[in-house]
Length: 230
Image (cartoon, rainbow, N blue to C red; front, side, top):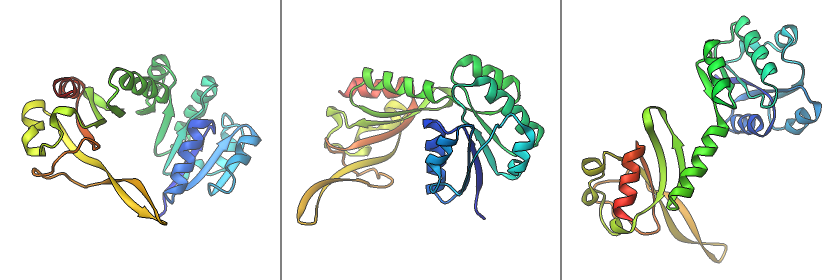
């Protein structure tokens, strides 16, 4: 069965969600108040429409209540986001995911009973801060309870050692999810560097200086691993 989603608010954030869902084969209804934003997504998603989502009859006309999930990605008009969310709740939408641009907005949405809240600005801010503090960190995904998934350049002191030798779990309480490895490949008569995922690392997998390690663990444990082995 094809998943059916609606994305309300076609700014950069909402547009990215709509495009990604459509690319993964989902049936997407993209909605915005502004016609030019709706025009930008035509041909990319299954359906796109310009309407006022604070009008319950307009939402009902799109059968919004039949969607598997609705993402409310309105960025600049928080009042509109709140009114839209309330109407979606009245229409008994199965799953509502709303955007919060600040801790105050998150608190209000939580008080309304919205359990799935996205804070893209906060996530981006944390990612930039972490990569500034740790130049070897390539990307950063914060999770609940102080856990995070990070991509880091293999630290100097563990280069040419096996996964078993560096004892990630025993010494640092970290899990190595996988490794991104750079290979030289010839394509069209030209040799270029291509990145591959090597799968689930084994104990005898050796780490090279060009490898990117993808780790899961708590923030303090990741920081310890990078500091001790830099």
